[in-house]
Length: 269
Image 1 (tube, one colour):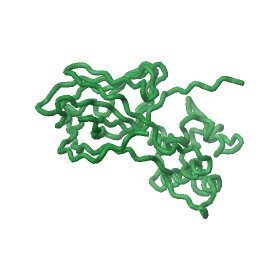
Image 2 (image 1 turned 60 degrees about the vertical axis):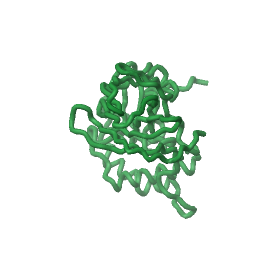
Image 3 (image 1 turned 90 degrees about the horizontal axis):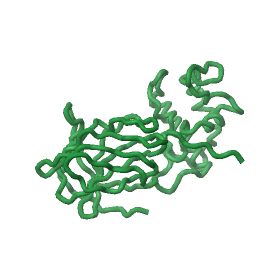
Image 4 (image 1 turned 180 degrees about the horizontal axis):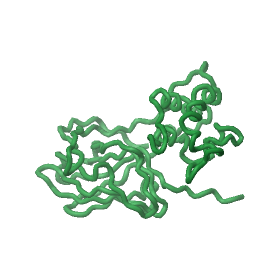
């Protein structure tokens, strides 16, 4: 288990979106909180199956069945609404549609509008509540988030590399160009190069290490970044300016989701 550092009072800021209109987000102490269910459930709560039938299945039928049922399947769409043997069971047949380890990363919640209508806020809330009940009943939630921190590096002027092997993405890297500012650091051309299995990333956060104490500098939270095997894509706004980055500081990254894009199927028995 990782140590929980004490709160820091650093008068620093992260200026996002180099070369364009930028916002300012204050650096904040590292958050190592564990994870609990995304909704509340007590002894009187209905079962996950009953909750799905009452408040989720109808929403998915209205919003998603036009492309994702066995009758209307088109192109590369997944038939996750095929009743095989029933819709709720079928949802778990596809990796990531319902994520019981990191529920907020479930594709039912992160898909956005794509080619069909996005869920309304009350519909998303109902889906989250149902997934929380599934987690409670199945006992699949770990006691805390997995350690998705890269090892810190000493940043030099010019090209820099953060490897992602430590967080389970073998062969993947975060690349950026760095320029020292007066007391700070300019990061440009920030991008991810995927390994042979591709990557899925969410919640990118720069982590500044000073005297073995980490401090967060969150990058913009956007849709989950999915990169094909050996592909490359910008990370966040593609750059950042740390107004405070002392000499000798280390730089790492942390993610809320870091997984291969393609998960190898289990060998047949």
